[in-house]
Length: 439
Image (tube, rainbow, N blue to C red; front, top):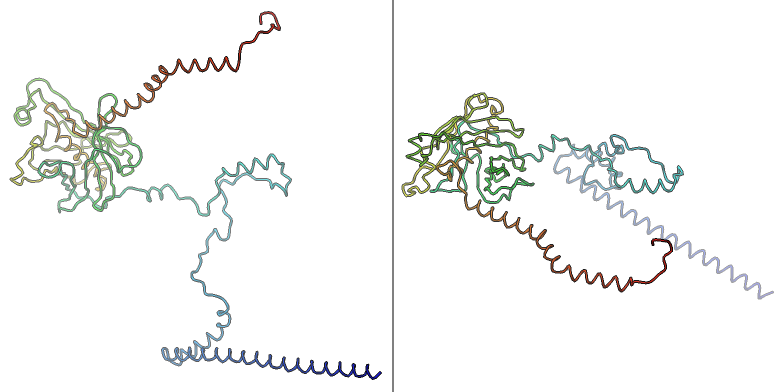
């Protein structure tokens, strides 16, 4: 009994000692947590006091009172979340689902509405080819035309000077300038068209490229030869689309030649007359010239009813003088364009008169290589491009016709022999009894 009593007393003493130790440890933890909380409170109060002193030093005591009151009321909620870097915009796509117009046909759900397996597979395959509705409406054709439109001329003067190919200057480049000397358009003639996008009609003629003063492409022009031997001048925009065409007509009056043309230009076989027709993209004549003589110094361009549009004139130079004395510093070769005060039709807007300047640029280039009979002499570009087209056509003919025929002639006998031997080896002849009469 004494042993049990000593064991019970020892257990009670151990229980009391463990409880006392646990109480002391819990008290110390509570004090440590309280001290840390007080430290954080003191640190927050210190930051608030420093912020208040800074605001008081910059704005005064009255502004500090209102700022402290406002910050005390709203700081507790704002400190818990981060300030967004940007404010998102709310649009129609945020609140509604995009819908197609016209709406797509109804579709069965594969599992909820017990859609058959074959129709579910078909709907899965076909739905990949259906265009999904966009979040924003598609752009209109007007906005697309404005975004991808060619550069527009903001102003166009009543008098324009178009530079012609000049042996003392440049034969392949020039400008359009106003009367005050400011440049409107720069033009450059090259053998290959590397600026116009898309495909254009093949031609052996050089191409003239027009650019704005800042370098933006404005358009091109080129003489195009038809399969029947005729030719016309095509004016294109910056996208390569033909907007105007120019037809040059040459008329010959037999008999006594024009004395001036015979003496100055060597055109002594009758009298030659030239006439030019400017047509829009629809083929309608919108401007034309009268009958002009060989290298006429000045003439008028009117509409189809005879209302004047512009008067063009040279500034004293002769087109057939291809080797002038450049040491005498001759004047630059120019075509001066003087537009009417009230042009008719589409020519009333000044910025729509640029095709006249492009036509005179092309005529000046053609007059520089025009022969006494009125025809235009081929340039080096014409010869090179013609040889290139002939070589390309010959290569295609050889690849598509000559090479297959040569292979057939050289290899047909050996191929037939190989096929015959293969047939005899894999399908030899065997004797059999016919199953029916006549077999």
